[in-house]
View 1 (cartoon, rainbow, N blue to C red):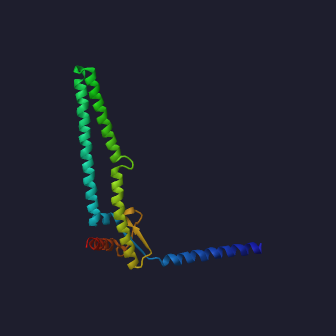
View 2 (cartoon, rainbow, N blue to C red):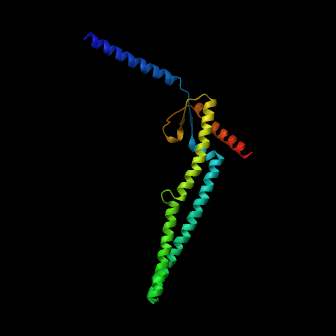
Length: 183
């Protein structure tokens, strides 16, 4: 019985040492946070990238609308003229309609489908911006001696003192990086 008690006492002592050393290590951690939503809304390069992407999307929407209009027009012609056309002409119109429908559907898939141009372009633009933001966060955190930086935009940060908010510093760093890249 005594050896069993000693084993338990040793086990409990080891757990206490482990917990207290973990608590001490956690007390030595220095935290900060950013608001990535604010960074994306205020960082000029992010806004520019979003505007470029929006223009591309609008162009694709316009092109899709034109293709859809052509399909609808051909469909209307086939429906209206079918009774008066010869079977050969009717077949030509239906074939043209099928080509237009296929062209439209292919375009939609190429642009909006999984791994389509919209997805690829968005990912490319976002990755460039995120890489820049991450580098700026790492630089600011390093300068301030921080071990961990959280993102308030994710919703997991319930409360933090504004003194730990690095968002303005990160935006300032990103702006400075952009100026050195353009000069």
